Length: 198
Image (cartoon, rainbow, N blue to C red; front, top):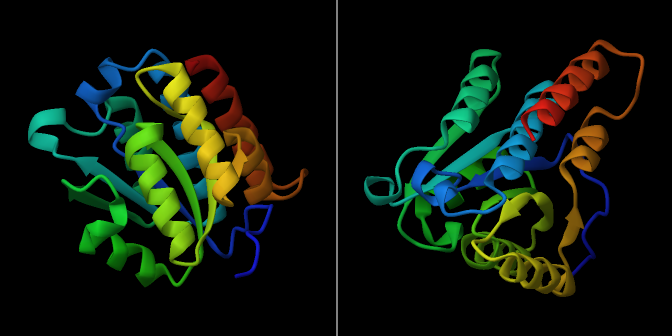
């Protein structure tokens, strides 16, 4: 199997936002930073024309997508970005057929992962994605667990398995690619917004 691309490609990436939900976020020490970093990823994906797949784990129990994330997703959808929302009960997103179908329908092979919890749904999705031949980029500052050590172990485990461990700003700048363009001006506004929300 070819090693994963070390740089996110706007022509091959799918942003996957995993289970950033109201009740789940309430239990996370670093939820505020994760929500801000995820907002930046969503805005950068929208700027670059990257499709977005959002999952919600058992929403009857864990609630809807976090309002701040939902707001940015609505902005992205209103601007023409492709946003698909999938409800699930499985921890591995690929075990939900609607998720696998949504990702496969994009024709893209690079997964950019953000979400909760790092050591459960994010880790399982990333590991299965690697097994299925996807390039997986785990955005460390856009993921969290209830305990910091669980997040750290999950990120290390994913990196050791072959995923690229990265940061939201790194992904955003890789997607936009260069300065001095209208896209870059929009990106700067998104970065400032994320900084203000942290």
